[in-house]
Length: 99
Image 1 (cartoon, rainbow, N blue to C red):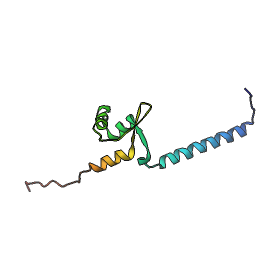
Image 2: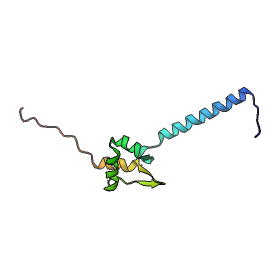
Image 3: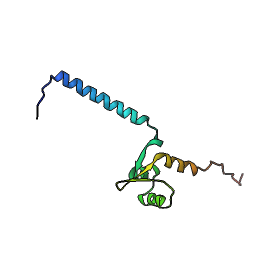
Image 4: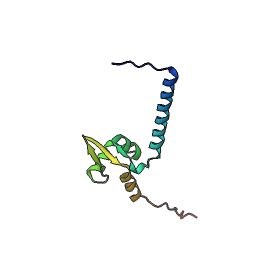
């Protein structure tokens, strides 16, 4: 293995550029719409606030589509959004009969 020696100023410039690239990548990742993301079981359970068993039921009943790669299950965020939109209930005002 070859050892390369550089000045500390040059090393610091390299580190600064790496940090800058990392920040750019994080910024781009945040701009990606949720609908283009693929979520694993843990992320999907957290997002929907359901148990793994409930999520399994959704898969078994065809409520949510999924993809399986090497035994790992993924859900497309746009499918989750579609499911939530299909089950939206309009807000309504309760009429109080006592008035």
